Length: 354
Figure 1 (spheres, helix red, strand yellow):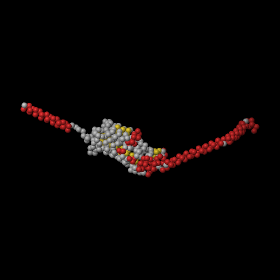
Figure 2: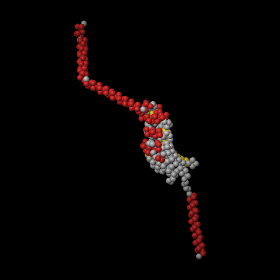
Figure 3: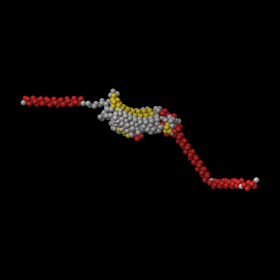
Figure 4: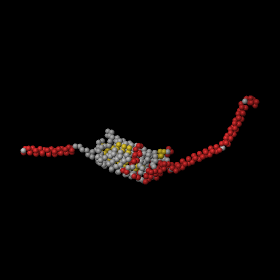
């Protein structure tokens, strides 16, 4: 009996030790196994934790965004990848917000920006989407980034996406936008209906297809004196429709490159800076008066022609008799010349005369 109890006691001790040993072994395995932390740098990217910068360059033709972006990232640069679509919440990490301040996505072949693509980047100040091929831009593409100060869309917007751009830029989340760059997009007008909903200080429209700036936008620019506009390398049509823009350019200092705003039409004014034009060159009143004078001259000439035709019609009998008399006189004169010619050509008459 005593041996049996001793065996049972030893068996119980060994079982307890085995259970505790398993716990220890499991704990040691857990501590020794490699665990990914939030500080890990994504593959194909280089990280500088001190400055908070993460740079991701092309690596084997990747077509997606880097996964598991570190939460400490303040500057993320992704360049040269083939990323056709920016989906909703493209930069969220496990549903948490990032501390990102600068995001550069230039030269990535982006074609579509879906709604809330930048959701979670509540502290983002600079967004660079230049040199892409945007064909579809959701009207809610820029929702969720209320602190954005600078937005770069240079050489990115295709003609099909131009109409969509206006809706995307009207987002209330862009009310703090300070600088907007839209150079090289073949835009024909400012793609924003109301400039007063923004905190804009710089609007870059260089190298587009702007021929004129409408009176609505000019009125907004007069009201928003802080805005500085860049308009060089646009084909301005210097006719009378340019009058409002011309006087704004002459009387305001808001256009920072006014000396490079050049006329492309008409041919006589091609290459002339808009600010060097004369007032009468864009004066619609003078142009209208000139057009009216030509019309009036045409009407006067037409009336003279009608009066002349009426005189001819009323004197058609006398004119007919006059023409008959002239024809008879001409016939008699021709007969006299014919008779003299016959006499001069007859040799017998010539001998008699001798």
